[in-house]
Length: 367
Image (cartoon, rainbow, N blue to C red; front, side, top):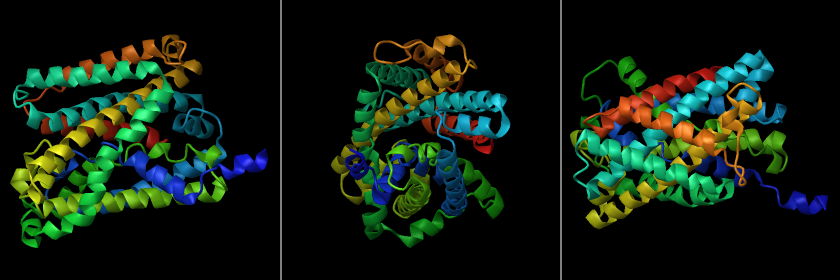
């Protein structure tokens, strides 16, 4: 029996792919437009962030090897600093994921916008964001298995175009277009890099889940840290290559104004039909990613409630083990946040949410 179980365990290559896929969800799809506002100099921000992300990922991998109890990074924080750190970590991570879910919904709406031009007014975009949040929340009521199957399938809708662009996009790359976008605002290098770091760190959020599969891995003491480093490094290479090549294909001013940058670049490379296909795939990927993050956040609040640190309503579940009451509270918070961040410009709203999420998530990361 034990030998059969052992043969079914995941090896280094499989876990590396899993780590990379988990990280490369919807975080990248709006970033080319946001980074274009900084300029191509943001490539330096990617390098700084990637090195830091690999350090954080390795830390999570080692913590996961030493701490086998549930609770993720909240449990790691408690082991080091006591019960209060479990609450601080869970609370700030919960708030971060509420913000992140609204930001992902804004990303999805940005990619839907080319098909629905009437989504131009702030109120129309607000209604669209709320509709996406409600749809994905209700879809989660079926339980973890359904959510996992949908998310595992839809995530490829963005991974394939992004990874493909980083390989084939160089045939359309124009060095002159890239250099003209290097530092459009003529800021200092330090200011530009620091402005870009907040944006690029967004793409690595979710890195804390990298070491969560140690029980299903062969030789976890060796393979989990290696897979985390290789997976994070691979994601970083794809991020840098895809955002670099897109800035050498699309003029900076046009890229900075786009709400669907990957659809735009594939339209330039091939034709509008291909661009529309990529845009639709990105919308599907966003919906799947949002499903996964909303379910994850419900589990974060449930774990905190089980520890007696969140109100007990967050711990109540239905027959499928889904904390519906906690999800509805989370949905209410997301809608309130969507109201608070209404903007005439979807990219401005996305950037505001992104900066807030990254800032708040530094608290559990530091702990």
